Length: 350
Ligand code: NAD
Ligand code: TYD
Image (cartoon, rainbow, N blue to C red; front, side, top):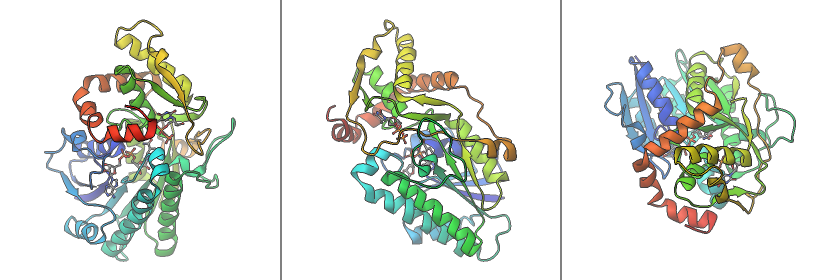
């Protein structure tokens, strides 16, 4: 039996990775380590929480003693590290949380893996999940490749870049068997409604203003979260030691066009007149240091590991909108709590 530690499993991407691994690999023990910040939600894992090969531990990745105990108690062979502070806007108002969790937390896990594994790396793997934002911002042309120089520009991306460097340093210095992937923007069910797509869906539903930063001309590459979970599965099992893989959707959208597309889909679903939700679009003050464009070259993972995105954006968006409309309790539990104070601070209104 393999014992796999997945950190941040109660969050958005982590919950999809946990579900995939618990269901697909009955002879792996899957240990979900999460301290349940505002972004962690065990409701995301209701359908797998009683599976015999699944175990949740409420542990902060910065707590070295508790992390070491989990490695020893569960005889961890593999790590898929997703736990992080993940929202750029929060990193602008409160950078220290990002430094602590994303940098220190990653080093605590690297040290625990080293201590547990000693010099015997047979069958061992430390997989660090990162973001394309470490590469900085593109102009109108070009794509990020695995050799693009790091140029992070927000406290979030700088903290992720720093953790990537530390993971590589442990590979070179201690021969720790690591692999890294850098992925573009994910979307899908269970994403916390501070991120663009679920925030816009929720605001359209509630007839609230749709805040578009600046002129809405920034471009993101969107990947369906289950395609990312499939890439993580592939890289965890088949990625080369010490290598980095870029993961993306080949799916670039300007924010304003994406928001209009969501309005169009929601008008249909809510039986509103065509064009009605678009009236809610409100241009607001731009994000400080807002990166213009992210776009990924996925040639390496396509050629070397045979992964590519499978879900068309039109299908993925429909699935996502349907999920949010069918899971009102999930979203209402979030937006009725601490979220209101966050929203007030970020957007100056309720
Ligand atoms: P998320 O914010 O939805 O979830 C993060 C999870 O980590 C939560 O469950 C939270 O409780 C947990 N966590 C936070 N701090 C912790 C700590 N100190 N100890 C233990 N658990 C802690 O994030 P997400 O969007 O699912 O992102 C997951 C990972 O993927 C992150 O590392 C992020 O940088 C990376 N990533 C995200 C995207 C994206 O579009 N969301 C794209 C590329 C890479
Ligand atoms: P976000 O979902 O926060 O992801 P990231 O900043 O990591 O790419 O934002 C996606 C894009 O949408 C980004 O260009 C910022 C923009 N945005 C808005 O215009 N309004 C909003 O309310 C939010 C949250 C984001």
